[in-house]
Amino acid sequence: MDVIEAMHERKSIRGFLPTPVPKEVLLEVLKAAVRAPSSENLQPWKFYVLGRTVIETLKAKVMDQIEAGKPPEPEFPTYMTMGLPQKYRSRMVELGKALFGLVGIERHDTEGRRLWYLKMMRFFEAPNAIIITVDEEISGFSSVFSIGCATMAVALAALPFGLGTCIQHAGVLYPEVIREVASVPKGEKIVMSIAIGYPDPEFKANSLVSPRVPLEEVVTLVGF
Image (cartoon, rainbow, N blue to C red; front, side, top):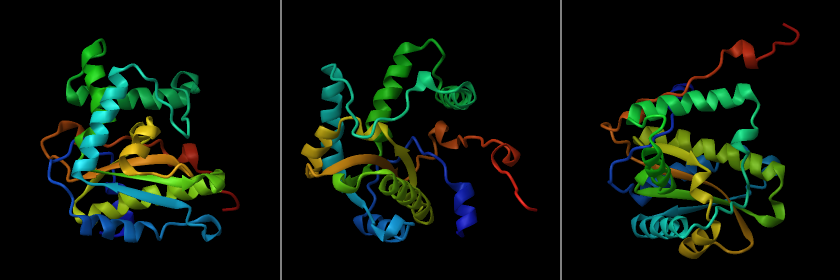
């Protein structure tokens, strides 16, 4: 699989087989991913690869937090959905409609949406996950941008091994639980998570390929 093919084939996977990924395979994926571009070669990333026992413990503890009514406290807050300009919000809404349509969740199905949220918070039941952190002393824009490059590199490097991924900010909404379960030091800020595993071919939502706007909307040729 070449790079162009991988770029076109990559998509978010939200249904996984229960088969754990061998640690040797996960290490091969990360061996390739750390070749991602890095501003000033700082290589600011740290990867915590969660095995079966640890990820199940993390899922359970996060569910406890949600059931107790504790609000999320991510260390890198994301955008506010309701504050998005309309053209961006419409892209998100259309994706949500397509996704919920595939899994049979109707617009007013409050319980179905709640269960989907809980599934998302459990890494979509992936057998493994990767938590990415950054040293808080270098946690500015350039380091976070570099981590974004490395995150994409993981998603691409996973494909030749038959793996699927879902890059999730949702997976790091309760950072203190992650610190406890994965022994992440206080000096590291928790940035992003990646659910990773073998895609379930029977899970309908895995067929979803999110659309992209036409090139002429995002590309300006200058001097041609």
